[in-house]
Image 1 (spheres, rainbow, N blue to C red):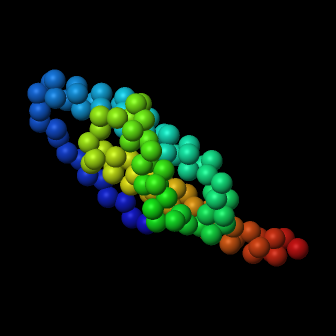
Image 2 (cartoon, rainbow, N blue to C red; image 1 turned 135 degrees about the vertical axis):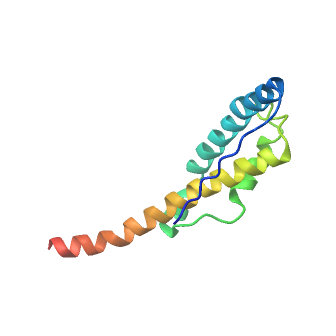
Length: 113
């Protein structure tokens, strides 16, 4: 998987940059962490791990009730979508790696015998 890094320069007033920083650090990052934690504790997680994939809408379903949680309110819909996409990407990448490692295990066991 190739990865592209994009850099940009935010040209805004100090107060606008400070507000954006607080929004990201105080609301969006904790939302991402909460989604990561809830997904890892989901009752179907082991099944998804064995399959190597997540259901398409599971992260957005988990995010829906969090939008009304006082800890995460006040974000724009774009930031909610960003959190959903980040968590989805993290878990899909991790699950793909886990599936590949699971497929290699029988070969390694066979080689050792």
